[in-house]
Image 1 (cartoon, rainbow, N blue to C red):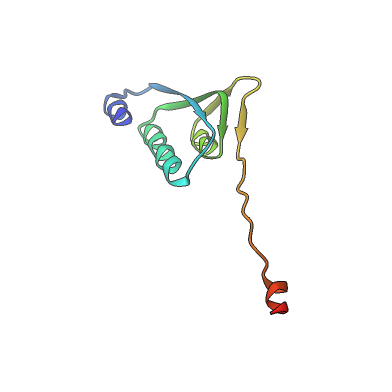
Image 2: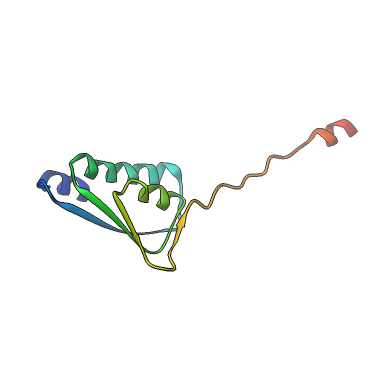
Length: 96
């Protein structure tokens, strides 16, 4: 709702500042949030993301949409990666 209101009332030359604090989460949730930021850009707004503490994983994905990212000196930004373990059952199956 907030993004729609901004998009409807935006004038040429307007800018948007988003203060982002996120440790990450699901791709679907953050993908939708990044999509909302894209709407601002499509309207022609200059988008700045400000990070005070952390923008990891999905938060980092949202930050990448911006024209400019401003971060405090000790902020943590970036993908934390995905860790998954794939069991290797070959040896076990050989025994049976």
